[in-house]
Amino acid sequence: MTTCQPSGFLRDRFWPGRACRVRNGHDLCRTDPFYAFPATGPDGRSEANVNRYLFYIFALLVLALPHVTRGTQTEFAIELILTGIFALSLNILIGRLGLISFGHGMFFGVGAYLAAFQLRYMTDNLFLLLIVAVLVGALIALLVGALVLRLGGVGFVMITIAMCQLVYVLILSTQTLSGGINGLTSIPRPTFWKDAPSLLSLDTGATFFYVALACLVSFIWLLKRLDASEMGAVFEGIRQNPARMLALGYPVRAFQLAGFVMAGSAAAVAGALHASLFGFVDPTVFFWTTSGEVILMVILGGATALYGPLVGAAIFLSLFHYLSGLTDHWRLVLGLVFVGVVLYAPRGLVPLLADSRTRWLERRASVSKIQSGVKS
Image (tube, rainbow, N blue to C red; front, side):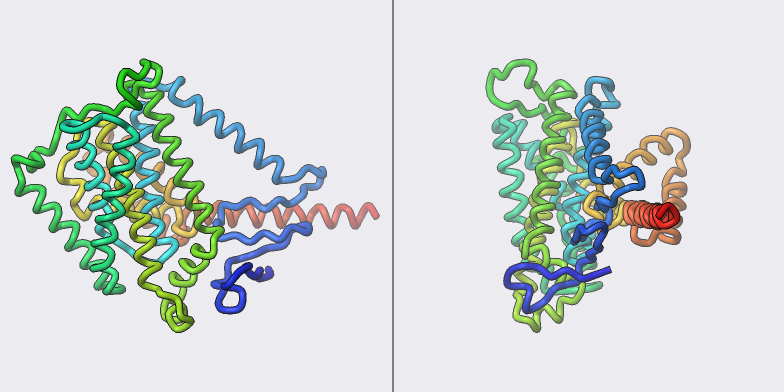
């Protein structure tokens, strides 16, 4: 294990200690435990090539998914993607800044209700829908973040719950505007443009799937760029020791606010597409349990892994859809699963699998060395 140094202005001031391992001459700095080391196996084939082929196969399977599923199965796949975006957005706060927010569902709900009003009364253009969701979500996150980030620790958690519940009660009390407890129904799906060909109609599950997938891939690409940037290094430093970063002259609250705005805008996009998918939204999206469920997804998958929240969302939704059809006590079973993960994989399932794979590669490399030594 060695420590690698960043380039740029952080080199001489502070480096939060991202893990770096050297395998066969490759210097691999990483923050994502899902990263696969390109070790060379006994047969001379590079692990990187194997991983690349596996990725291509997985990508083809995902692209073919809407053509081999139908109806509710396709809707479930789209819901999984949108929930994954929601969980990934929350992980900007949890995994990168060390902020646990029980009010993140507020931005998801804002995006959902915004899409409902826009699609029902204004325009059904998809691009305008996404742009408005990003801008309004970012604006509200900026205003809320400027208030709640003044507190830290338990105070931050409590005030985010209070803000979320305040909006929940407000939506319930505005029956004529928001539909009250019944929510808003008959929300039409957006279109690319007026008189778009039927092939591009979002009324078909396949087209909606690809739109959601494009949003997910774009968001993951942005997160990768963030993690590789100097801003991502500052985020990591704030997560590990905000007092030290402040002492070094970094505007900690400004960086936290920037992350808060990023997370809020992404959650609003997920909420807007979610309301468009099901044609319905109700006030429960603002209830604190919505944020609590997404926190569970992040913890299940692993907050330190880039794809951890996505895996956690897939596990949570799969258990919910399967268990809720078997028993009314599905929350009990899900709770037991969560307790097991906390006890035996406290960093999450993705880091656990990544560590297991690393140990397997190290053992295989050791065996290969011994065999080559015996032959020589």
